[in-house]
Structure formats: C-alpha cells, structure tokens
Length: 426
Picture 1 (cartoon, rainbow, N blue to C red):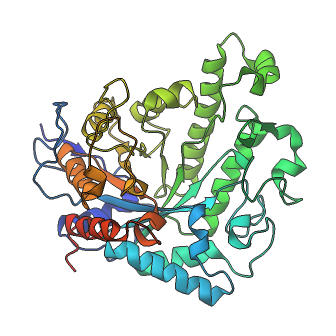
Picture 2: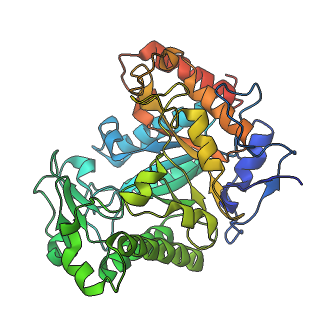
C-alpha cells in the first residue's frame, strides 16, 4: 500500500508542487482550500523503524522547509521607519529564499505583547525597547506582504502563556494595558518569570481571541505555538485552583486537560474562521519532558483529529549525540525514528526543528564528534528526513545562519549545502 505524505496543510500544497520540480512556489493558497489535501509518495518512503546512523543518499527536497524568525532577531532590523524596516525584512526574506526555503515562522507574540496593533495586547518591547510604544508602522503587515511577494508562506508564532522573564530587558517593565497588569489574578510567578495560569478559562479565551485577531487581520498561512506550556512542575503554582477544580484527577492529569482544552479550542476556532490556515505546535524533542514536565499530551494531539495540523518537535541533537550514560536515544537518526513511529492520524503532519545554533558549537554530546564542524550537518539531516518520510523541517534560527558568527566559514558552508539539498543551485 502506498504511503501517504501528510502535508503540513492545504496552505502548503503549492509549495509541495514546486518542491517536486525543485522550484519555488509561484502563488498563494486559495481561500477555503482544505487542510486535508495530500499527495502520495512511492512505496517505502515511510520509516520502517530500522536503526540508521548515516543519511540516505537521495534527494532531500521536502514539502515544508522553514525558518524561525524569533524575537531574538530584532536587533538585526532597522525600526527607525517603515521604509528602513521594510528593507531589513526584505534582506531577511531574500536570504531565506536563497536557501530554497518556502516558509517563515515569525514570532508575533513573545511576551503577552504583539508586533502588530492589537486590541488585546500592547506593542512588544522587542521593536523599540519599550512595551506599549507604537513604532508608527505595522511590522507584521510588512512581513506578510513581503513574504507573499516572494512566494513564501508565513506562519505567526505565538507564545500563549509567557508574560515576562526574571532576567533581561522586560523585568518589571510591563505596559499599563498589558492583560497581566489589568488582570493580576490571571498570572502566576515562577522562578523563571511571570506566566498566565493555563487553568483559567479567561486565559484560554484571551489566547484564542488573540489568534482570531491575527487570522482576521492578516493573510497568514498558519499559527504556531512553541514548546512553552506549563512553566513549572511546582505543585504550589496552582494548588488553590487544583484543590477547587481538580475533580478527582491527579495534578498531572488536570494540568494536561487544561492544555488540551486550549489546544482544541484554538484549532476549532481557526477552522471555523479560516479553514485553510494551519495550526501547529513545536514541542521539545524529548517527548517525555513534554508529557511529564510541561503537561503537553503530544501523542494525543498527533493521534486524534481536532487538535493540530502538524507537530514539529525540536530535535537539536546531532547524528552522534550520546548522553553521559552512553545512551544514543537522542542521536538524530534514532530520535526522529522514535517520533515517526508514534501513532499519527492521517490529518496530522510531522516535521522537525533543526538546531542551526549548533554549528561550530556542538550539541554537548559525551562522545567525541566533529559533525558540527563538517559544514553540512543540517543538509545531511534534511536528506535523512526526506528518506525517512518526514514532512519537512524548520531551522532555529535565522541569525545563526545569516548573522555575525565566529564560525563564519562553517556557517557559509552549511548554507551552501542546505541550498543544494533544497534544489537551489546558485
């Protein structure tokens, strides 16, 4: 029986067609196109679970080839005017195109704030250093227009719960109209910072309305949540609400149920509003941590329709990665097989996050390896993902491939290898 390549969504179908010919997408998805559209791959393209430590010698052009553009990238942008910002964005997006990518994932809500004019959240401090300060233009509108001009799809990346960190420029600098300031009972303090309480229906509704605001006002092709759900395992974090609403569940069960409710609510809302917009989540690569530490039941979301269109685990380890006790569970080939072997509904795609920040630095493996000095590790990973039947990848993050680096020659080699793997030959 032929295996099915479950494309990230209908919004990516045009990019898939372009990928099959090694070219770029020439258009945008039609409004209302089904996220369930798919195509078939030749027999044997799905993983068989057999261990493999070396990339397969085959083409690696995948239907989903993305770049994460995080709030950490903002120092690269000139925000002095709309024109200067647009020039910066054009440079970034042109660089993404040069790698043969077809999607950018832009962080639009990093800290209960927004890089667009919002009726719910204040302007983000990442734009000009002050939360709540209007930059005089709409950064997200610029990103959407310029991405689509280049045939790139664009997804809006949202951190649903994080309000501020306990270190960095946002400490005690929340805008007066931040929902966390207006509703202090919605937030909880942890060792790492301030977060919304995932158990509160008001919080779930606010996050959902924030998603609606983005997809109604901008022609984004997708919404992505990252791996920050429950910020702590500390039982004191929500002991009062658990005592009142736990209803015979264990704390872990109750917390997972709260996250499930939000994820399902956001998915249903997106599909009711704009069915062609995809909803994906990028969890940790270690799924044990997702389940036990962040109370995210990724297995449920993958196996059950109605939660997500795709899952993109952050698999930031190399082919040779070995833990201190000698385990190779997280070595790249092994961990992607583990994910690919998980039960998955036909409506859910599986792509992988790759760690560009590892270039030159390594991944902390206890086994000696020079793979992150090879100048082609990311390209080798892309090829193996293609061979195993994955639906694509995203690179974390833009600055690691195009910003200043002490490993400039290695980074340049990695870029060239990626471009070649993606059918971009100069």
